[in-house]
Amino acid sequence: MQQIILKDLGFKAYKETWEYQTELLDTAVKAKFDNRQNNIDNPPKHHFLFVEHPHVYTLGKSGDISNLLLNEKQLEEKGITFFKINRGGDITYHGPGQIVGYPILDLEYFFTDIHKYLRFLEEVMILTLAEYGIIGTRSEGETGVWLDVGTPFARKICALGVRSSRWITMHGFALNVNTNLGYFDHIIPCGIKGKAVTSMQVELGKEIPIEEVKEKIKKHFCQLFEAEFIPS
Image 1 (cartoon, rainbow, N blue to C red):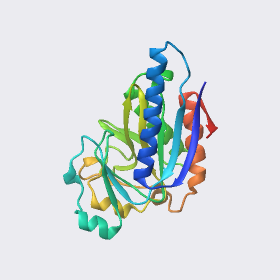
Image 2 (cartoon, one colour):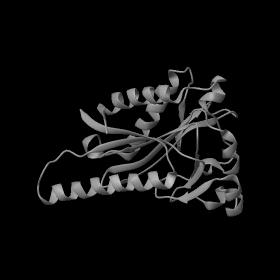
Image 3 (cartoon, rainbow, N blue to C red):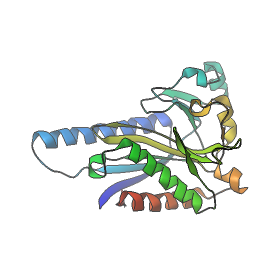
Image 4 (cartoon, rainbow, N blue to C red):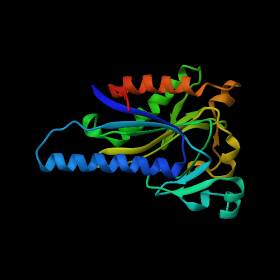
């Protein structure tokens, strides 16, 4: 069973968190390279970061800037930051009331399949939502977790975007719990026109305790990935 160092960063700016993720990734990649060079089998340090960001839009490397519907001045007026980043996927929003998770895992100790990794992250969310009576599903050809797929009311509740280097992952998922969905009005989320977004709060008609949801995410993540979390 793999051990994963769990760290809850609380409320932290996107840029600082991205830099911290990159530092963890670079350290893991270097350690892996050194181990191979010296023919040593040191187990890697896997990490899992929980964080809540101030208002921010991030655009993935294959994303289209036209999916951001605000100019620089409007972003500044609304107190929203914007970053072009190195994950897959298009544009998304992070903000208060949203649980963001960044697993930094060496997949060679789990399975070397990025598509399977994405499906496992989706499954963690689907199982977590099911505990609240929310039926989350996948939408063919679109990553993330959706409700009422195949109907005019299809809406996204969780976004995913990852990258990997030498099978070590970074970036991850963003689950809308008590998120202010108004901020999605200023983008075309994930570059998919005509698809709505939702949150657990909207679906259930009440505010949901963030820490409670995190506990359920942790439980399902450990079960699926056959891992255990250890405190940092």
